[in-house]
Length: 477
Image 1 (cartoon, one colour):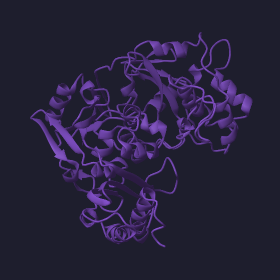
Image 2 (image 1 turned 90 degrees about the vertical axis):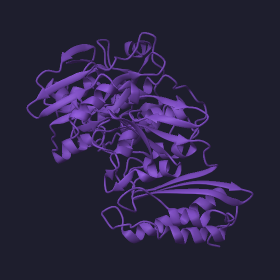
Image 3 (image 1 turned 90 degrees about the horizontal axis):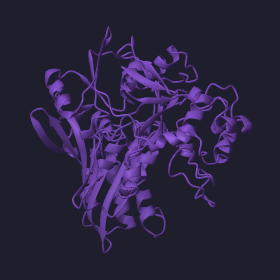
Image 4 (image 1 turned 60 degrees about the vertical axis):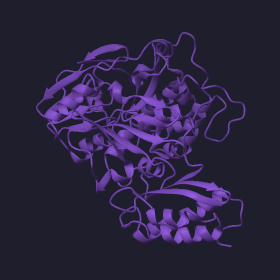
């Protein structure tokens, strides 16, 4: 096993099966990347990885190295903060941060530099004389590229200034030129160490055959959830099966009947592919953690964990999505509303994988996603509510309401849906629906919110949805 780091081939020998990429890099004296939180929330560990751009070239993608298994880098190409500069001087991103005073204690700066460089090299970044908002620069820089990087010295303004003053890569920029060549192909990997075994099968058939033999194996995709268990909880298992690079799980298709999203497609890739064509997901994804997380997190992983507070399940429930499950025995399709059976429990058998998520057409005409959390971005929701409603002539003809954070599993607000259908979309109906939704689920009190607060937020979400979708007077008037 080996990996290309800053243009140099390095062997991945002697690593532990559960060792993360950050620890391996630091053990190889590439200490620019730091461990701040070990759970993907601070970005001090950010590096860039060469990923396929969908057109035969590469795109530099920023990721949290603290979450990625080192063995998962087998055959891949990585650039750390040390690899940005050349013999001729600092990289434009590094020079910009220095000139703007964007580095104070310096602990977080290498991670910022890597995230900023990935955005600097974004192929479709283009100057915009009048940006739509304060989170985009005239140079086309999207500040959300840095949303997963925390500055402990609160030096955000100079960091933003540095980002907004960046020009375009020069013609002799080797990292820019690298984008014209194909990204490394996925490498089939089978590595064993004292603490376990890491396997990346060559294809889906091999993965399913392995799971048929080893049904207790842990399936790993983006590792944004699993990596936290390894780092924070010290979880160790005999076998990890990596499916993040399986081509059969990396497909995205849209036809007249449905959009089908491969389980190992990352959330960032879904954002780019859909480009607002599924408006409800278009509202969800920008609120999902941070760009660093979305660059690795997969839709199959977010559904597969069975978490009651995942962001995509409420929206997918409202969209009537289904889950395609595959095993060596064959495939089956299960409605997402029937997929969750208990707290982090699902109908998926141990020898099955989620192959894809399918969203049927036509889509509802009126949708909204409300995420209630303590922070605007990069946070876990206390409550998440997704609405998908059809209104014809002022009458609600169809309604789906997906809920997260109010029960042991993501659920549909079935009573509220039944109340809405056939009713006029009026303030009175909204108030009745608000009272109904407040009674849905079994919200509990924890460190994020009380059960009473969660119920109130359910109620308020309906009133907000009504206000967003009509030009009537305020519901409470």
